[in-house]
Image 1 (tube, rainbow, N blue to C red):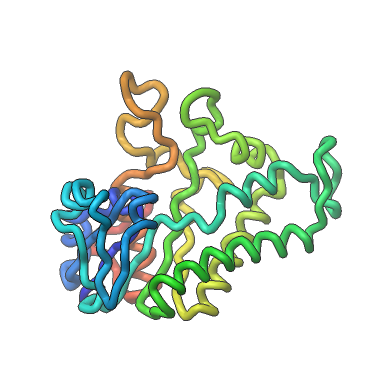
Image 2 (tube, rainbow, N blue to C red):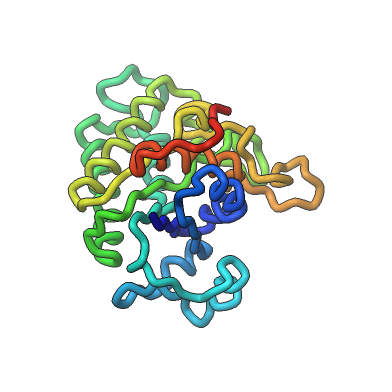
Length: 258
């Protein structure tokens, strides 16, 4: 069985974990192909070939060793890194009081029904874009970009203002669940699968555990570029284990319960 992990910069942790993943799933032929977000969006898809633009040639070669990949031979495709309007939705959640909930501040009011409709509309637009590009391909399962790290509450580089605001609200988990349900429903309507971020990698609603931070990416790491959005290879192994269990009906040779 041939499986491709395809997507944005969030494929890097899977690429770096390939040796372990291939050991964990020795019956699979596993490959990755990724590009930075903007370059992934600009890439062409003609026939069955996904191809980096000439401007992305160097990074494509650095990350993948090739500039294009034929999707036809693969039995399953795990597409990682789509955000499904996450930034806009969390900004909207953080900036409003819900009419039916207890008031908190002088934020603008919005009803639950209106907010749910806005979430569904934003998610539907993103799913429609995936379908327009790749078709209704039942081989595709989407794993969204992971939620920012819990440490992103810290002011300075890597601070996530809206996520920090939401983390202080007892309704955050309810809205994360509703957001993910919308993604799953719209992907199902398009004939594709959905894999939510594994629960054991979450710190709380909309935030990932700091244990899965990319190495040397914190504010304290001298000279490092602060990165609170990309997770490490252990996260990749846990996420792929969830995918293999749910979609491929396979178990790893080693358990992942961190």
